[in-house]
Length: 455
Ligand SMILES: Cc1ncc(COP(=O)(O)O)c(C=O)c1O
Image 1 (cartoon, protein in one colour):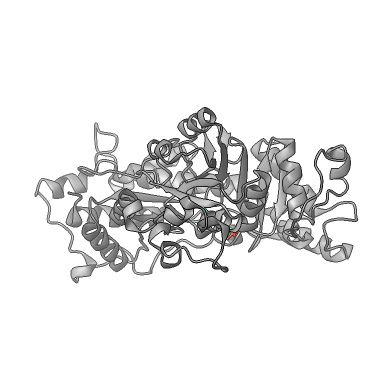
Image 2 (cartoon, helix red, strand yellow):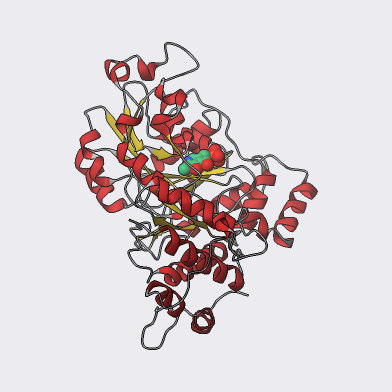
C-alpha cells in the first residue's frame, strides 16, 4: 500500500509524472501549459471532480492503536495501581525513560498536557514578573498563556515562510528583561535553531523548544526537544502520537529537571528520582500537580513504538506530493530548514495573496480533497483577548510594569505573519494515505494550480 523507493518510479510513471529524459516532467501538464491539450474543467465550475469521495487526513496516533496499547492498558488495570508513584513497574516511568532515550536527552518528565508542560518549563526557567519571553506571532494559545500565567510579558516576533519564528526578527525584540525565547516547531517543520541558539547564547537567554506539533522531527540530525535548554511536547489528539491528552518536558540540565519535577508534583521529588537526583540540589517551593496517570503512561509507552513509522509515512507521502508538483511553473513551497527532519505534516504552496489562496482552497475542496491554510495555530496578536491584554485579575503582573502597560499587540505588531498565513494553502498528509490517494492529491493540485496560478 505504501510507496517504496523502488516502486515510486513506477507509480509516478503511471501518473504521467515521469517524462522521457526529464525526471519530473509531467507530460499532461506540460501539454496543457503549452496549450496543446484542453485544461480540465474545475469541479468548482461544473467539471468532474478528481475524487468521488472526500479525502481528508485523520488524527494520526489513534489509527495505530492495536494490541500493544491494549496490553499495556490491561496491565495497568490488573495491577490496580493507576497512580504513578508508590509501586514498581510504573508505565509513566517506563515511558519517560523510553522517550528520553528515543530523543537523546538525559531527562524526560511526563505531565498532563502540553500546556502544563509549558507551565512547568516556565517554572524550571524561573520566569516570573518583570521578565519578557519572545514567541512567534503565529502559534498556539498555550505559548502566550503560560508566559502570562507566570506573570511575565509575552513579546511577539514575526514568522517567516517556514511558518516558524523568523530568526532575523528576534534580536530587535531583546531587552535587558528578556529571559527566554520559545522556538516552536510548527506543523511538522523544525524551527531554524542554529541562528536562534546563536542569538540566545550571545544575549545569555534560554531557549525553550515547543515540539507539540513536531514530535519525531529532527533538526540537523538531532531530535527536536533535545537541542535547546529545555523542550516540551504534547500528546493531545492532534499530535503525532497521542493518549488524548498528555505532555512531557525534556532537558539535559539536572537543575532544570529537578525544578520541573518539583513544580509538577507539590514541590517534591519522589523515588526513584530521589535516588537518581541524589536527594536533589534545590529547596521545595510552591508548586502544582501535573502528574501523569498510569493509563496515559501505558498508552504513550505503546504509541512511542509507532512514532517512527508514523513520521516515516508522513515524510514519504509529503515528499511524493512535493515531487509530483515541483515542476509546476513558478511554484513556491513552504520553506523548511531541514527537509530530512521535517515530519511532513503537510504540503503548502505560496499563492502570493489571500484571494488566490482562498480560490485554491475552494477549488480543491470541490475536487473532494481537503485543503486549508496553515492550521493548528492562531495569529495571536490579533486575537481579541490578547489584543485587549485580558487576564483573570485586573492587576495581573504581566501588564502592570511600564513595559507591560506600553506594549501593544494587534495587527501592527505582525504584518509579515498575517501576510504569510494568508497566502499559503495546502493539503495535510495522513500516514495511511494510499498510492491512489497521493495520486489524487497530486492530480488535483496540478489541475487547480493551473487554473488559479501563483502571481
Ligand atoms: C504549539 C503548541 N504548543 C502547546 C500546545 C498545548 O498542548 P496541549 O493541548 O496538550 O495542552 C499545543 C496544542 O495544540 C500546540 O499546538
